[in-house]
Image (cartoon, rainbow, N blue to C red):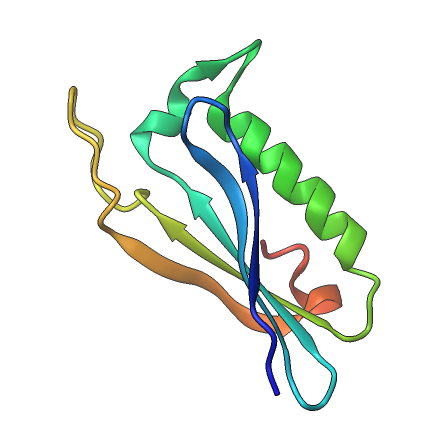
Length: 112
């Protein structure tokens, strides 16, 4: 039996900064967490004293650091909006790519 739920760190402006979009526990007890990261041009906008992308990276690093010592956790990273050339007035969030496939949190924490 697999369990699924969604946890998100949400920017009050509307933008999803970092999402633990899917968490599943397999029959073998492993927990798989897929991070979805917005790498689009809109993340270059300011939020407080930093850019949204800087804040999102910091949040994701803190979250990964809190998970990397757990034996039964696997992590992966999917990004979107990061492969299209930035053009003034144009944003493309339709591109998406699994940048880091699922692997043990200890092994992949530095890759993500």
